Image 1 (cartoon, rainbow, N blue to C red):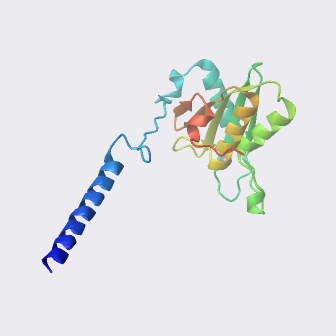
Image 2 (cartoon, helix red, strand yellow; image 1 turned 180 degrees about the vertical axis):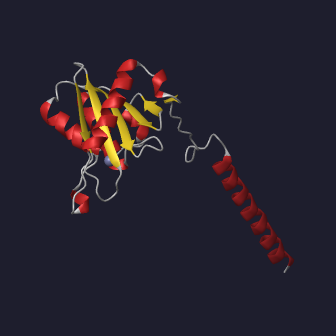
Image 3 (tube, rainbow, N blue to C red; image 1 turned 90 degrees about the vertical axis):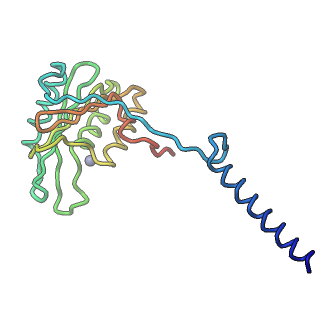
Length: 185
Ligand SMILES: [Zn+2]
């Protein structure tokens, strides 16, 4: 009986040691199976767009003007987008909402698909986004982020994305920063 008790006690000690060692394995930084990592994204922020380079200010103005051409009777949220190509040419587009709601399209994708169809050999250097109302900076939706990254990959050069609103702007030097862990086929 004492032998049985002794085995029971040994088993408990053994189990305790196993649990302890397992907990060490998870917590130790030397673990090969688990590691916490941090993702850091650098970007520029301008409290006042007047402090930006003139070429960027001009592109923001073009995006702001494009909001006037938006068709947004349902959301009443007008978005304008403008691109500057390597050649210096600029183009703009706005969002278009459809009576069949999912059939509508964001300003950014309308513009990018047009550029890719007509000026694919003239890489996009910068894309500015603006909205009306403009109470805050306007950021691209998830689907547009994917397409901006798609274009970046296709043209093999980064796109400066300028997200403006309420007189300020946030800028990333590559769309990849807006979409970490991007989907790839
Ligand atoms: Zn979008």
